[in-house]
Image 1: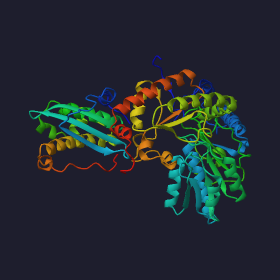
Image 2: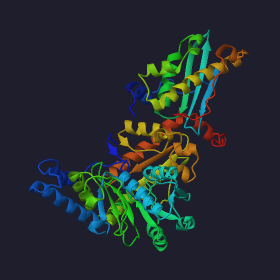
Image 3: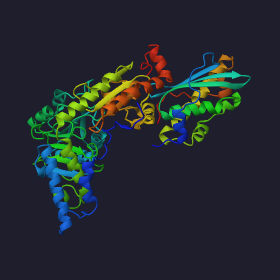
Image 4: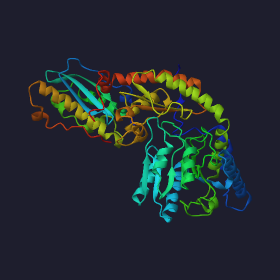
Length: 399
Length: 141
């Protein structure tokens, strides 16, 4: 195939779609009024916010008054966890339950709270990358104030039993938060049916801009503020509203939650074709459950090679993807998600994540399928580790 | 993180990749757990590094520093090769991101390990000439 540009890192961020940009444009140009102002261009902005709130609420079966706009997934996660902890502490409840493979916005927030007198249980996940409800239930204590479990994992795409976890939390009267940043638009979300108290979402994963997100807070939960200041967001989240961003987020939520099943069917077919073809490469493995995963998520490890080299080589061919290697995680260790599902370090270093969106085509998949095996072969040919694997040496024993 | 054009060039077109079957010295440093291993082969003729090859498992900087290190010692007197430092590798590559500096250290160590093996094969204690070759068994960023 001729060289082409294939963006296959949609779990990292996405391109702003045309309808989203079109919806935003008036609020980036002539409708610049502050939504708190009384004159007409201010009221235009206030009306836009109201409409956006209705759209987002409807998409997850929430009430309009239960949606708060934020700067993104990380802020929503921080708000939910720190402020639920605050509420808990007032009642003498200082125990939080989460899982080992959460996004860092959750993990690092929990670690911060541990330094401030909270006790956190990190529930393990199974080798397929799934959380078990029983493990959450077993971890519950009388002083548990919050359970936070991601809806879908950002690296291996596995979809968690959120409704069931929500049910045990509701039964025990424990607040339940889910980071749904990767799930929205890929899985049907019904906050009422799924027993969710708090939910985080982000714009830039669904073809809206970066720097905008939302939080769903069930009526009656009433968390204190994370951001103090003006009376915006019904005095719950200060700061002049990012009207254009919020309008973009709402448009993106509206679009991505339409025809989810149809979109999933198309994407999961493409995903499974890529997985089947790439698993033909010797010494490769799929990370995460093959079925209970996001329709666009492929995560495969190739033994004997390192992820960053793989990504740079793919980039030279025009393909954007990501990896869980230490070099790309910016730390000493490879991805905590891949280690959590039991991969040895050396195998985790050689992982490749391809995340597709509705903008990807079958031709993109063909191109990926053509290029990846050649690159893996080239990198293996120059890898002293691959030599050892071929000699059947136990490469992980020495460490 | 940004790689210089030279780093990308040496990553995309690495020089001296491969093995030397009848090498006079072979050195390997790094480990699978940390995510980088470098293996260097040298051929010495009349006190000159007449040939050098490498194989590397690791990130873009690991490949580029290996490639550049081989270029810097190829055809040079062995005494000069001994003096190769990670700084020289960094400079020749127009710099490295801070988090990748350890790759240049690994490249220096790999060259020294190959030279050390060469001296051992010659019946000379490499410590007398090279001093202690630092082990690279800790993962670093």
